[in-house]
Length: 201
Length: 164
Image 1 (tube, rainbow over the protein chains, first blue to last red):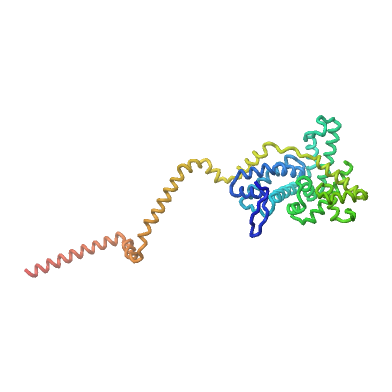
Image 2 (tube, rainbow over the protein chains, first blue to last red; image 1 turned 120 degrees about the vertical axis):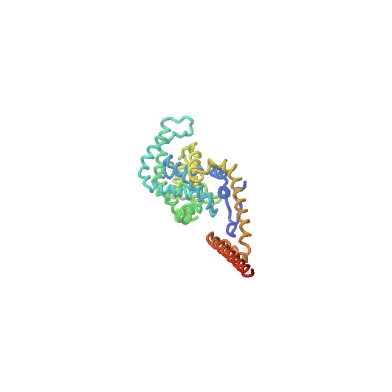
C-alpha cells in the first residue's frame, strides 16, 4: 500500500495519507480498517495521554474515548487534514479537559502512586544495582515533575514535538494556533525544561 | 555567522540542531559556531540533556484488554432498536424477507386493481349515483313500482269493464 495517495478534494488536489484513506473505508462500513487504525495508533495515543495526565488508568480511559469518538464520527469524516492531526486534536482536547476538570488536583497523588507502581526500568546493565535503580527512579521522577509543571499547551506541544516527532505546522493545526505561536510555546517550554533538567547532563 | 541565541528564528535552528532535526550542512555550520560561542554551547548542552532526560521517560505498555474494552463500548453504543432486532435477525432474514416480498406484491396488485375503477372520469358520476343509493330509497322505489303496477292493472281492468 502506498503511504500517500493523491485525491481530489473540492477541485484542489491534496495529499491524503494512508490513515485518512483507512478512515474513509471505515466510513464506508469497513470495520477491519478501524482495527488497523487502532493497531497503529493505540500506543502513541495512550503514551501521549499518559505523559499529559501522568496516570496510566486515566490515560487509557481517555484513549478509549478518543477512539470511540473517531468511530462515532466515521459517518461525518472528511479528510481535510492528516488523520493524526485530527486524532491528536481529539486526544489533546480530552487531555486538557481532564486536567481542567479538577483531576489535576490529584495529580501529585497520582505521581506518587504511579512512581511506586511503575516497574523498575532496566538500565544498560541487565541487573541494575539497587543504587542504579534509585538513581534512575529519582531522575525519572524529576523529568515527570518538570513536564507536569509546564503549562498545559506547552506540555502538549513538547510531547508532540519530542515523542510524536510532529512538525511545527502539524502541532499548530492540532492546537489550533499559528505556527509562530507553536515555535514560541516550544521555545519557552524547552527553556523551562533546560533550567530544571540541564544538570542531568 | 550571527549568534543564533540573539534572534528567535536562529534559536529555532539551534533547537532543531540539538533535536537532530537539522540537515547536515546547517548542523556543521552551527557546530563550528558553537566551538567559539560559550552561550550557544551552553544552550546546546542543556537542550541535549533535556532531550536525553525525556528519552528516558518510557510509558508503560498498553493493557492487553484495551481493544476488547473498546469494542465492548462500541457495541454498547448500538441503538436499542438494533439490540431488539439483532436476536430476530436470522429469522427475519430467512422468513421475514419472503413475507415482506409477498406483502409488497399484494399491495402492488391491490393498487393495480384499484386503478381501473377510478380511471374513466366519464363513468364517475354514474357509479357515484349507484353507490349513493341507500336501502330505504330502494324500498321506496320498489313500493312506488308496486303501486304503479297495481294502478295500471286496475286501469286496465276498468277499461275492460267499460268495453263489456
